[in-house]
Length: 317
Image 1 (cartoon, rainbow, N blue to C red):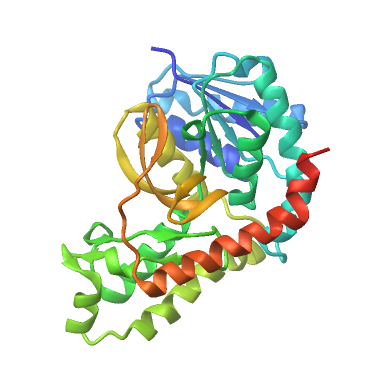
Image 2 (cartoon, one colour):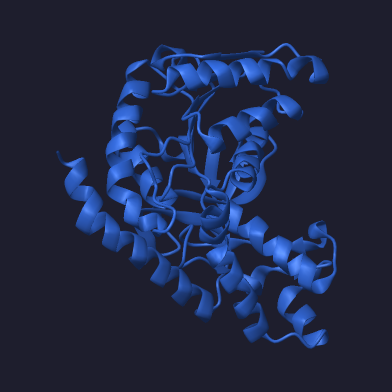
């Protein structure tokens, strides 16, 4: 069975993703890059092709064009018009909106009927733009959202508690950015309610709030020192692709278009979703406590303000 992924953007995230796709049991047998820097893409593809004997797989890896999207299963958007790493994700909303409008229009023109996976920042706003421009059903447009924030939180929490990563079951919801928040009320550690576990081990929720501040700062801190963030986000995209390709029906925090779920409408923000071969379906029955619901409302207002003031006028042009 053909499993073709087109990656739009051959920067650090796109190339890191391609490397992971050939180095894991991802089921992908064709990887196509689309990027304005065609010379760079050709050399990236050559380097990636030289890896194939190590994994003993036949995978087509090459530079392509939008025509390659027409029979693709998944199109991944990692392209970025030049994010300034010292700025917040929301500050690059307009410049990347213009870029993604053009990309999505070109992809849809080919007859592409697969699933969009969106990683371009600010991911909630860009996922919204893809929904509006493409006209696709919402299950076929998936933003990486707070999946990355969730694994960052798990990493820090496991380190603090000295427990294995897989002993922690928790989701971060809301905006992929400064207004994200962990859903402690639904979390578990070693199959025990997370809040009860903290109480039993004399860990205050204030300590956890302080720890979570490191999650909020992580992206900018890494990018300011390294020049980019690529490995963890590429692993997050890989997780999404694997789950779709294998029809695993896994529940993940993803940015999707809401239609009156969790009290919100006409916005993309991360909520629990069941991910399978058809795309993402919103899980509607996760209960948030009062503090978490307030955090979610604040997060959606943060996004909505940008949509109203900056993005919707651009989409009407």
